[in-house]
Figure 1 (cartoon, helix red, strand yellow):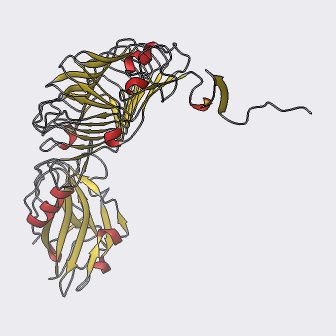
Figure 2 (cartoon, helix red, strand yellow; figure 1 turned 180 degrees about the horizontal axis):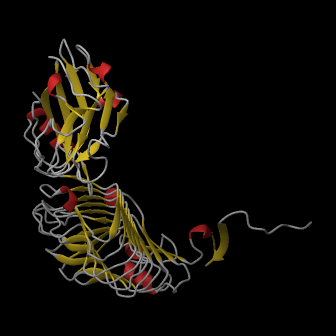
Length: 464
């Protein structure tokens, strides 16, 4: 009877040193290595160790030396593992390996940086570092993870770059991760980076050289970063920075890139008390999408790159005191029927404007008599552009709409091009289309306008 040997699972079994070993080859076909500093006499950095969790290696750096480049080897750093060093804690100098920390919270593998020069080096391409806890134990540790020049496709994910042991806020990374030149394809994702209030870290991630296609996403960066949580020191291309939660030193941007760095910046949330909303990201040649900033504790977020002036608009309507671009103003003129001119711009309802306005709506409310005589009431202005003059009015409505005790809006007129611009120096006029107005009736004409130019002014004129 024939037996099918077609694979239907990622699990494969092999005999190794007298034992049946089952591995999940779906996560990598290289060898598995184990590291545990708590193994005592069961462990050792020597032959006969490292192949299973009961007899692990004692240090991560030694385990790395046992790997073969680009074979797909995986090193598991076991729960509760601890290492510290005054220099290089470990050097990822074998290409294509994956380092995975086991455990959660206080059980995560921890690496203590005991000197400002202590660091973790990544010296070969296509490597992954996942789920390690990295703790500075000296003031101003210069670099947490140093991705060396020319090393490509590094993945750093799910790691914690946390405060040091001193408790007073002096032990911090100046830069948690530094990416040197030509480190194309680097990905930094789902990491948790934070610092004490008393410290002065410079950056969570520093791109310290020209690199392409660096991706920084889904990270939490809470620290008093004095430059920006994410910044570069050289022009990079096609960066992708998205969905990061960032808090920086008051007044500093969350993201600051060189003027000609290109790429996409999207869905980031930034807190920086006192920073201008549109200065929370500095990245002139990047495309921005849906990034928000909080400017003070307990306040709502503003969209970065499109200043939200809703508060100023409300203040202008309620208090009449805001003159910023986008703010709304209403002015009112009283118009006597017999003072309405015939088909000529001699009955102004405003003085010449200072600055540019958008005329959004005209509302007319007549008295107990109303206007009479012309076939239609016409509003026009003397702009240089667009519909202008008596021959191209901005609004026309039949005289019957302006009879006794009526209210009519330009939104309901037979013909209207509102909203329209009132240019600087222009005047709005009222007139009949075929006859002048007659009679004793009058009406209040209310103009609802929005500033285009900050500080723009306009005033109504009675027509009598």
